Amino acid sequence: MKIVHIVGARPNFMKVAPVAAALAKTGVSGQVLVHTGQHFDANMSAIFFDQLGIPRPEINLEVGSGSHAAQTAAIMTALEPVLVRAATDLVMVYGDVNSTMAAAVVCAKLLIPVAHVEAGLRSFDRTMPEEINRVLTDQVSELLFTPSADADENLLREGVPKRRIHRVGNVMIDTLARLLPSAEQAVPPKSLPERFALVTLHRPSNVDDAQVLRQWVGALEKVSERLPVWFPLHPRTRQRIGGSASVAANGRLRWMDPVGYVEFLAMQRRATVVITDSGGIQEESTFLGVPCLTVRENTERPITVTLGTNSVVGRDPARLLDQVEKILAGQGKKGSVPPLWDGKAAERIAVVVAAWNSDRQRAKTQAN
Ligand code: UD1
Ligand code: UDP
Image 1 (cartoon, protein in one colour):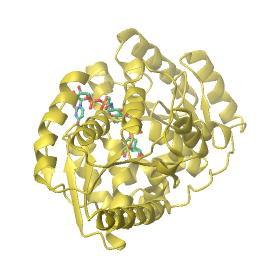
Image 2 (cartoon, helix red, strand yellow):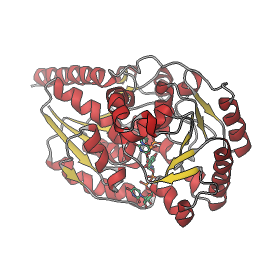
Image 3 (cartoon, protein in one colour):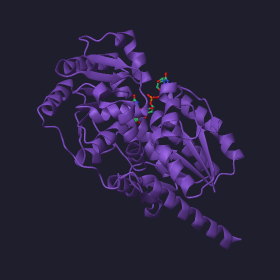
Image 4 (spheres, protein in one colour):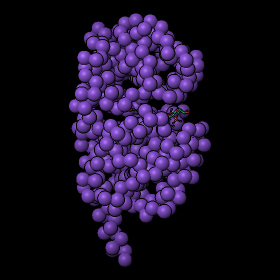
């Protein structure tokens, strides 16, 4: 069986790593990794291949950045001939970035089956580009691997046949569980402050508008009066903050470049509170039992709120500060780990893929 994995942006790498490894263990030898080049800085891409032990991509489409239409079209145009050349049984796509949706649509038109890992998540907010990517990818996928029951329900409501939906759990947690011991070694707990807030922001709705971004920076300065704030800056955010990121107002708001996975994991594990608009970090903080304040109006990962440590605080800085105070007073959410977030999601995916392939071979033999 020949499987092509399509990845392109930072959160894809944590997801492909365990899946490729689990498929290799079940004897799938023909795996090819295609990197679209959506993310390209060393600290947004190459570092993860090293740290996560992902094989180097056979092909890098090097599409880089652009408007949504330009980036999506560039991925589709570059990927189509690659897939036409390769006799592919299954293409696997991950998450909700432009690379995910672009690849899924190309495959659908070429009649190549698609498997979507992290299917069914919905924020119900179609102003988010990721929501469009999720809905479209799920509509054209043959195998839909979901992390939680809410995702199954969303897919069924959208008319996806039940037989295509496989609740396997959360592959990001597979990677986290595997690398937690290395994280402790890479960043010894003693090198971190006793209490600190770990921040990431990169959603266009939070960082693209200068006034909104200024408001968040002001709020983080206020948070830093209460505890040190560490803020690895996503390149989108770095571009908008510009030179002001080198100067901390009171020396306790510490900006830095994006860090590697194990470094970020070590920081996240020891953080007093995580403040973020990231999708994956809402999940990781729930697994780690660290209170997370999500500065968005909604989340496509509601289980992190109902079972986990996540609180969606909206985009009102006063509410954020209020929640930080509660956490400092020991009233942060304790949470629990959702079912099937057990480090074995990728193994379950490999079992489903093997069964799907056997059924397909049998059907082909019968047809001949
Ligand atoms: C993308 C995803 C988002 C995901 C995020 C993860 C889409 C629509 N968005 O957002 O869902 O949460 O990745 O990090 O797919 N840039 C660099 N170097 C890089 C990568 C980007 O400088 O290695 C800069 C580019 O100038 C670009 C900007 O960051 O203009 C945004 O990059 P892009 O991939 O378009 O979207 P993200 O905001 O990264
Ligand atoms: N992450 C990282 N270094 C950083 C910030 C985040 O390794 O400086 C990891 C984080 O642990 C998680 C993933 O990047 O595994 C989340 O990616 P991101 O927030 O870019 O995308 P999203 O999940 O919002 O799509």
